[in-house]
Each structure stands twice: as structure tokens, then as C-alpha cells.
Length: 121
Image 1 (cartoon, one colour):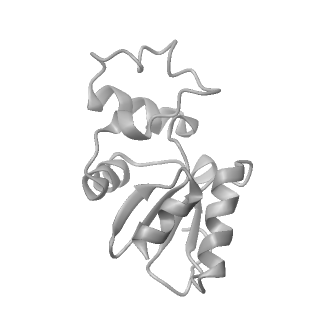
Image 2 (spheres, rainbow, N blue to C red):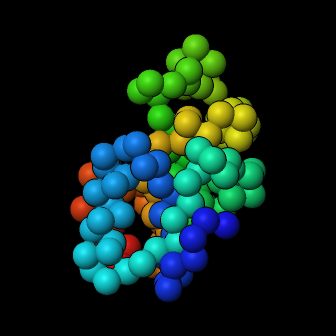
């Protein structure tokens, strides 16, 4: 499950993404060593995504990444696309999940911009 941090903070991280790297740096600056999950390598489970979305209190569309993905071709940007369809696509192609998502005991959020992570600490 990625490298274990010394806290109950988890970052779903893409090292190729500047915002994701900035968020991780910000956490470390605050003395938090999170558990880093490279979701592009590890993938997602339906339970993981549903739990994160429940903690974030948002529909799946809120964490859908359309830039540089097939979201549009797959019809996922269509307002009629269901949460189930979006989640199923995210499991098949993890890049469809926007990043970084950080989960802490206080809650979870898509941290774009990176500073949003401060509200979770």
C-alpha cells in the first residue's frame, strides 16, 4: 500500500503532476509524512473511490479529470453520465481521477490548488 507515512494522512499522488508534487511538499513542510499512493500504478477499487467520494461529499464528476484523458470520448463529461459509469471508467483507467486527492481524519479533498490541503490538517 505505498510507503507508510507516520500519520493517518494519505495522498493519492501522481509524481508527474506539478500540483500533486506541490501538495506533497506542502504536507512535508507542515511536518506531515503522508502515506503516498501512486494511484496510476496501484489502481483504484470501487470501494476506495466510493469511500473517498462519500468523505468528500461530492459526486464522481467532481474528481473526473478531462484534460489529457479520454473522458470526453467515453461520454463521461455528458451531464447524463451516472456516478456508476464514471467510477467504472476510473477503475479501468486510473488517469481519469484528478489529483491530488488528500484524505485526513478531518476529511478528504481534491487539492487543486495545493493550498487546499491546509484546510484538512
